[in-house]
Image 1 (spheres, one colour):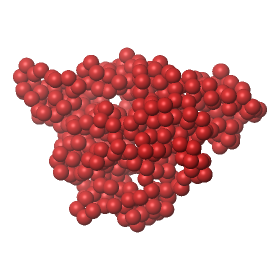
Image 2: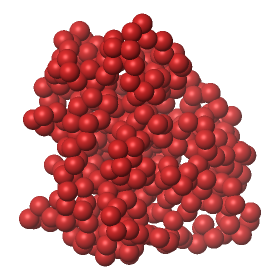
Image 3: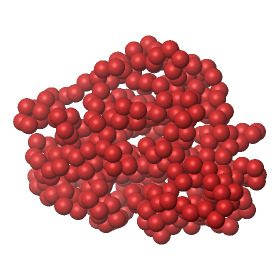
Image 4: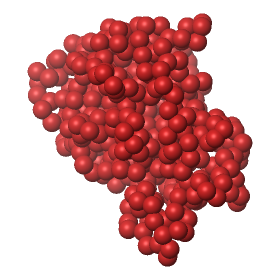
Length: 440
């Protein structure tokens, strides 16, 4: 399931700015937001010890396959840009583990990360006191639904295919989770791939070893799947909206004014982009204002609330079941975030709605305050579909551009990829964006 190395041609033809000697790892992403993201499951939370930050009240379902160990064995890992720590369920022995898609990872004693290792302290929000620098480095991740993962940090080989044709096998520190309490007896993945901006994550470790630049990007397809890259600049030199990244410890483009259609409903709201959340969350005040405007706009639409749907907290039915999301989305308006220097992130109705199994349309924006997010507003997977997003930790910036993520990496029959151009796939802004800019 790992990507063919010929994918490098795709980016070179697309005008990507890859300098000599630079390369990137590119991995196929699997999964979707709905229906697999609609079941109440574990919350994403950061970080370790006492410091937690619950984000998602629904299962994270976008994942990649990585091979870990020597000999290498496959594991499915959730793609999580909101967390530094990568971890997988393991037999150390396992006290409590959900049934995953692969056998449990089994570490050997020589793989244990000692407490005195700088990476041990780097994963913790608070300074960690070691009784002995040789003792094992324990971790605990807490979840907002009272679930948790506990384990020990280990260091083992990750087999990573790079786009320049090389297969690198760096030793990466990650969590070996031997005790989990998560909702459900089975798990769709074996663990988490933490791609946060902290200095101890997998991305930072690769960068510190001189193997890749500290840059990560993703393109999640509305039809499911997509791709993830970290390392080189696999994106066009132009056509992107860039903002300075906030230094608050998350991938944050800063504060934004929020519009529904052309109506401003909230000012200077802190925003975080997080692939660990299936859905998007607004804190209570902007959420209430958003709902009020939404309901005003729907007052003349042929929709009525479908209280018994169950897919998400708020759903509507039409005169007959909707056959496509586009059929329902025409009754809704785009949500637009306006950042510093009038940089826009426009989320079309398809970026915050889902079509339920009953043919109703449901709102994929939820109240973040109710799940402990305080004043944070989380842009989750649903609102980043068909959006090429890049987190450049070296230049401390975040960028995005509309793209058809299902076409950017189009698998052909001989296990290669079409050499379509990212350059030509970027979707141009429509007239609405220009009208909104003219009002600001």
